[in-house]
Length: 305
Image (cartoon, rainbow, N blue to C red):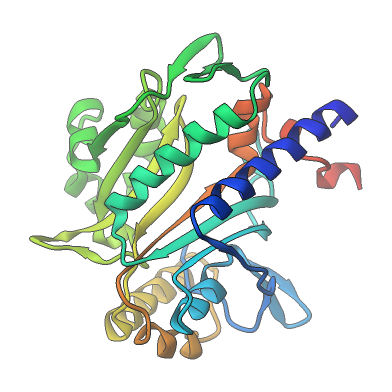
């Protein structure tokens, strides 16, 4: 990354923090090494002297919510063993925030406002066409509200040749989502894809009136997933059952987890209704800086070390 692009990234980081301070959030700084990670079957953590580098600050941030905090945000490096590619790095920068008393619906609205204000706060960047739109791969993506909201079931009906139930039954959900659905999302406006099957929302609460889906959403811009948010599951016993299911899946995939995070489960009982979201800052900055890959939007990547 050149010196000028470093300055642009610095402006973006400052604008991110300014937004959350203006909304009454407090910034926190939690440990990146954990003795026990949250079980997620498809996430492979890095080991560190018998502990684990966190793949997200979620575990510690929720424990701070249990202590009475109501609005938290954090910008930190996260680590996941995954294939390195155009939109992936094994070490990356995450923005995560939580607001007590909210559901995923209020969180979607705040996510919209956050991105619109961020664009207005840093004019002149290569990926920003004007104060109300982005420019990506030669196309203009308007940011005017409201952004599109489409359920997972609706997206499968519109773009796939099978239902959600069929995709789950044949273990093809991720493949269909990535190859047939995602390329269509987020071009006319950013898109919130929401109401995921409950099997794919291990930390999200069930939707009232339809317990087959979880109150989870993902934000897409230009065919790329930028953020993942949900109404938090705060029932310790249901969370325990879901973690056990994730551990079984991880075992089958050759990615065993050692034990359940008991301290985290104990603290869930002290958290009221809350919504939280994790947003990949490097991917977002890739758009705003007009980069072709996340690596170009990062100050340094592991191949340079």
